[in-house]
Image (cartoon, rainbow, N blue to C red; front, side, top):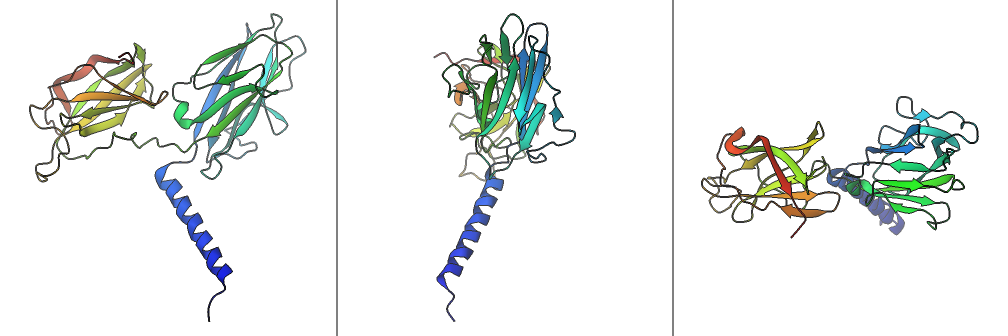
Length: 303
């Protein structure tokens, strides 16, 4: 007996749903991050925290979210998040690959006597996570800020009591290198250590460093590590596998390499102006005379 066409269509849709769900899991993780906005009104300030987590719901989650008390008396400074008709200091919502849609938190403000409020945030690693917009309730006529482009805004209109924080999360690939930074790991390698800056400022933990041999092959890449405000790299640089003579996986003795840095905030790749001729196989240990704890490497966007 031939099955009705609609049954085949249903089965096809189910298969496609499963396939797309599996691809989402394989290619990128659910949104899992938080953002702190410091709201300063002169003598006092508040840290307001929003974000996404697979362990959170869109309601109150003990140990994750924090309610805010009723606003202080008129004429005194106050700030809180508005979400689902409640006031919050912290409101983390559910992060899911099937819900990469715009989420809106209201930042509720009460101005101090001087009529000025400053909002500040760290935007160093925001761009890969999604879009972040601060906007007034009039569609951006008075306030329209791309939070990935700037890290603060000052408000001096006491009538502007609500600012909308609009966040659209993206699939994120925290453990996967950016395009072109893929490499083949083999037992032959040496580790390059140092601190990394961009235009004299510390790089971010979402930035990636890669080493390329003279033939342009990526011989290793790794995300930077932030420690005590400094961006460190401890990148293994892999050698060429002698058992695959037709494939060039990486470095050979006497060969030079160059370093390239992917800046996540700008999605640009910068190349260090000097090459290195210090590679050696240390079976994964640091390479003598090649980088070091006291070494710093500055990448510039100037041509």
